[in-house]
Length: 330
Image 1 (cartoon, rainbow, N blue to C red):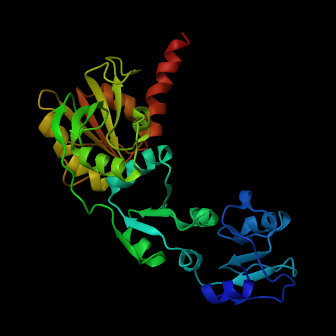
Image 2 (cartoon, rainbow, N blue to C red):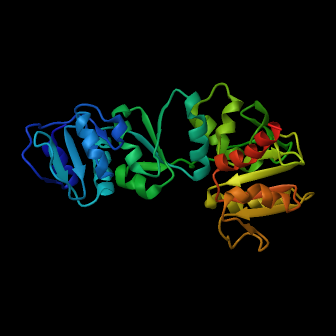
Image 3 (cartoon, one colour):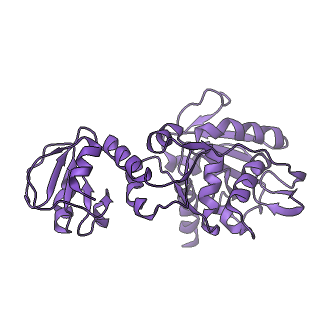
């Protein structure tokens, strides 16, 4: 792509008179820069490394000394705006299928798209992580985003993913976490999904045209993420205990999940642990500023189910596993 075209697209200012007039691809991660790339410099300290690796052009928003006059140095007002313009320009060359989805569908798409033959690109929250994948986009690509504002900026010709209702029958809730049901004469037995998310699951299942469901993929979903614990708060296998933690990092789904938990889990005590106070949760919620105190907090509170909001599931797992590993050393 010509550097002069890039400057026009992003309304940039060329700071020098380079001998190079074109680039091959865009990069924001300096570790992935190759000879001929354009490097978008969010971190000025990475510029020297990018040049050493063969970058043909640098886009930057701050003042930085021109250390190589052979390559192009392009100044812009805002890097994020420039990335949006570049992505929009590149995508305009393709006749894509672009969809705005809700958070639930988007999560199932992330979880299950690897078992589909469709070329699916899910827009990350930060578009700088998407720009390097543009070279893998073609007319058969399906573009998905749960951020309609961003999607409208980069590909305005998009439609809603949730535009169809599905008939699901014979729904049987085995537990909070497992559901059996029938769809199009096919029986899905003990799928590890709460019943509130079955329709969203089927929508994605149909869209991906999955012939054989790999149930193990659902473990990677961040929806209703659960850890089962024994009496000593050690992690046990799925369903092997009546004490468990549910974790959510998506505030838009918390109310839906809490209502589901309260309506279905009426025979046990629920406690709520949050990283900051949430108005629509019970006043008795425990606000935990330091996740490292989780095990002590659980020890000091009687519960059957604990719903956690605002913590990384990986951290929760590490903290609960840490003491378990320490105990095995003695």
